[in-house]
Amino acid sequence: MCSTSSPLRYTLDKKERLHLKRDVDALFASGQAFIAYPLRVIVDIRPIVEGEQAGCAILVVVAKKYFKRANKRNRVKRLIRECYRLNKHPLIHLAEEQGLRVHIGLLSVAKELPSYQEVERGMLKARARIETLLTDEWKKDKEI
Image 1: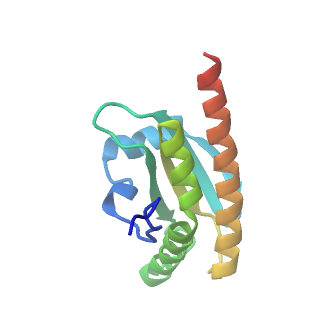
Image 2 (image 1 turned 135 degrees about the vertical axis):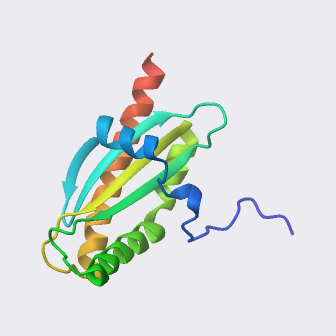
């Protein structure tokens, strides 16, 4: 029994989350931002350095300004993480193909509690935009 590829794992490990202060600071300092309602997306694409793996890492932020109660902020964060977890594989595959490290910040801009469908629609828009950024980045690298 020899499989040609490993099965897709729908998990969100620690290595797929942005947790180092230097990575978060770099994301906000040099990332490209756009809105895919109800998300504001910040993307920082970098070539991998030695000791780093190609792939994607995310940061999820929900502002206390819009959701005063922690349980509502946690719910929105859970929705965003769930949508990313289920839709991440094309991004990761593209980043690994091109040898890039992609840091993604997903910030909620909704003023009311969004539904799963709204978050998923925004996530799919964001994923499509990030995929075009990755292919553009790859084309630039090939021209040099």
